[in-house]
Length: 189
Length: 189
Image (tube, rainbow over all chains, first blue to last red; front, side):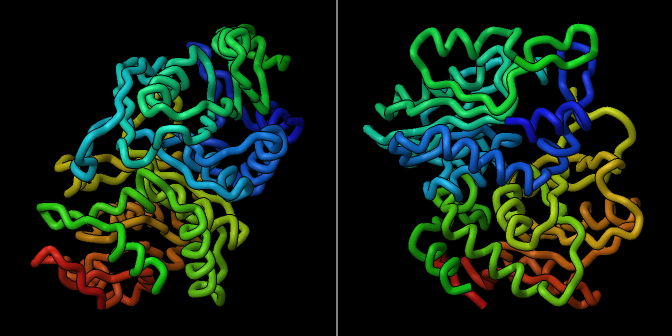
């Protein structure tokens, strides 16, 4: 998606450790007009598929998931990173390592919110090593739900998880794929 | 807002410690159609005021803030609860105690994202003791930005912070105010 690539070029910052800081429009400050158009683009890509629900991960996937769901006309389930005082009852849980925060998280979804046979689209802001997406896929498998596909704002193509999932027949659609940022300059696929 | 009150009555659960679990439509699973209408109601209430930006708090304020901002036509700034690998540079910071999680958080906003003189609406899912809202107000004060008002999904009226802020002349608008839940049954103002 050209608009997102231009935003990354103009406002993204390359930080040490293969981190792209896109806080000014995607994470910390949300450019709602851009996110709305990203949601429309995701809707267009998946338009031939039935989608009952979107599954995303707190916190930085929520805004894109919300606007995509508003366009598609479905609800969103947010996988939480820790068990909190207001999660009770049985949950689906899957471990994943965060390369950003350098720690293990347990993603948790209340069993009430994903049902057997539901068609679920995973939406997240970044796809790098694929840890979070694989944890979401584990949760869908536990629930007996069907994975429609994976919709991502920015894929770090050079870290391989996106292509690995595609090789397994999964419809991974990323609005921008970064293939190189090793010299501090971002090159898109 | 009647629609939200009905959702709380039909799907909310009262848990020990004055916790209302509204995970099935507001926090963990997001009823996007309801949140969209909540955003329209918030827009209507604040329609006579200029709003440059919405400030919310990760993670559970993001969905309502996003849909409200989409209706109003402004961007959202998300106050983060911890310093992460992709927050660099100078930040505004304010301490607040979380009664839900029983811990102290530092709310952080990059200084780039809130500017002197900007008109900012605070949006969050809950208002109880007012800790998070007061931390956001501190951040706006540090930035020299102007507080337009405070927009809340569910206010726990019996905990007093909303009325205290109103007594100080702040436009606090809550879509549902719970005045009692001591017997396990929710009474609205």
